Length: 262
Image (cartoon, rainbow, N blue to C red; front, top):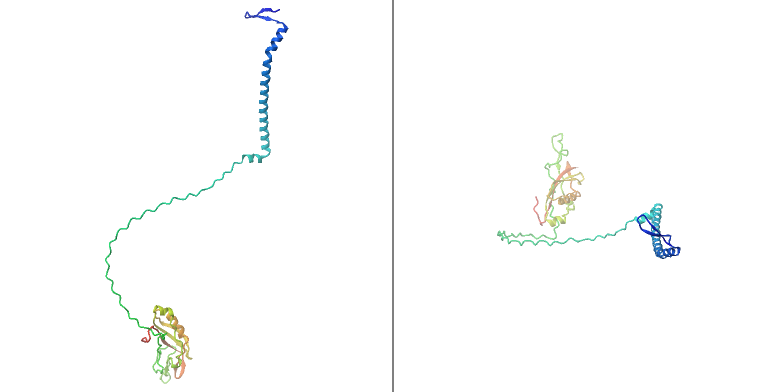
């Protein structure tokens, strides 16, 4: 039996329901709620387990990186990027077309003088060198020649000077080698007169040869010097005694057959 009872608000509630009815009502109302609660609890536990496993994995990885820095460096190593350069050719600019040249006024031609024809004297093939005239006369001279001061004849006690004969080229010495006429000088038309001063010793040899006057071409001067150094002369004499003296020897280089000798 239910014993009615009024609460503070005036509602009447039943107190102490019968045991069979109360147990049946509780069993019928709490069964679905308990199933839903168990499902929700199991889902919450699975989420919590996933969170805990993730946190544990992160802690484990952090500890491993702390004790093994190579792993951290390997992970943090940036990815290398390969860049290839491409050469771009500069655009070729087309050159500007030149302005058309203006027609120049024809200049007045000055009358040119007609060239004069020069007569060329044919050269004889057999003459390689111009004829060499003897410098001194073959006959001894009694006149006093120009000589060195130290070789001048001294006056004798009686006041008479001894007879002096200067050096000269004799016919016996015509085999003296002639100066060579260089081919370059021939091709260029070089010619001229070389004057040499020769110091002849008492035996007739050319002791010293010096250039007194050049012909204007060093090649011809050298050729004359080298040839006269090998010449032999008739030595000068004082009272029939051979003495040293100096003479002037002219050498003429000419491309003509019989050049004038001066």
